Length: 70
Image (cartoon, rainbow, N blue to C red; front, side):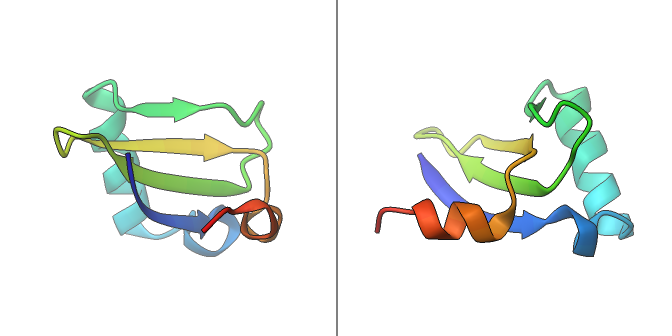
């Protein structure tokens, strides 16, 4: 799996680009919201077939950064 980015929803949540991407991923069943209505981050990935997938999480971007293994 390739990681494209981890984004702070508070910063990008109101942009048209974010809304359009989420809507597209949602209609294609490639968006998972695991945030329990506490949206903090948006993770954009792709699988081995280069299929893009998005996740909305309740874990903040700073916390994810601290836990990343490079």
